[in-house]
Amino acid sequence: MLLLGLRTVIYPAPDLDASRTWFRDLLGSDPYFDQPFYVGFSVAGYELALDPDGDPARGPVTYWGV
Image (cartoon, rainbow, N blue to C red; front, side, top):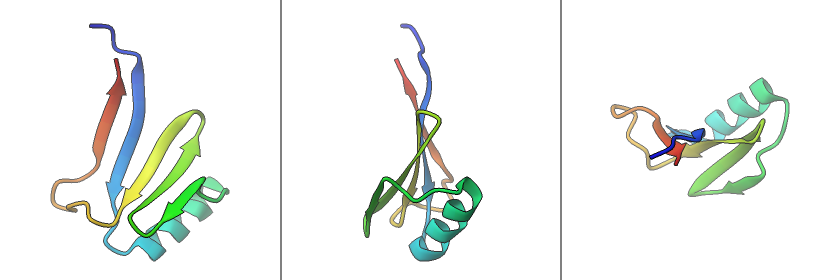
């Protein structure tokens, strides 16, 4: 198996509005996908996402390209 590198990180975001605003200010851009169930930012070819149903105790979920 060949790892192609990090592709997506999904952060739990129980307060989706506050998380969206925080990441928008940090990244200096709006999300490319913005729905009540998922917010996605494109960052240098990678996906940084917010999941309002994610478990903060579990932390972020990372997906690698293979």
